[in-house]
Image (cartoon, rainbow, N blue to C red; front, side, top):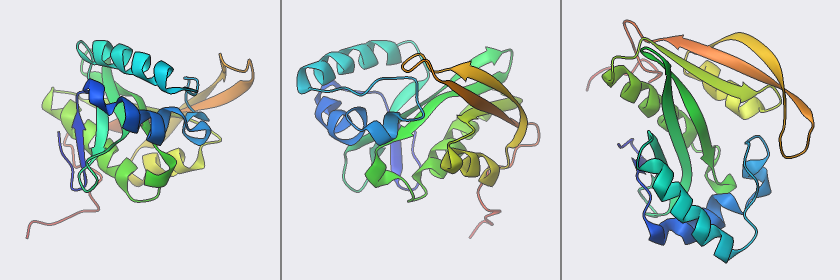
Length: 180
């Protein structure tokens, strides 16, 4: 799958180094996620094997920047009920945040779910993750509710906000672009 600047594709083993450097070793990327930082190259190589195995049977992809050809993040979706989808996480390395890439990814995931016959898309984010909340709103998602969770890494409580978008009569969050 492609966007203007990105490719969402299945991982290959050789991507382990870019994922380690750009994403998995970065505490600022893991901060709002449910995974732990990978601390060395051997662990990154093992993580890549697990990632590749997971992606074989899941709608989950690495995110590649077209310009640099580097793996810079990951994204995925899953069907939670008939024709209702949710994100399974969107993560980008810190150097790739603030470039509009998150919006491109979320738009593409929504379009993908529409192509599967999806009628609703759910997006969740920690209440403290202001950038993720702004992304959801910029793409037309509306906060439906929140719930308290416990971070399995730290044992600390956090508020998870659930955003939804109706996909019937879908128009992507594409800033109302008109055909050229």
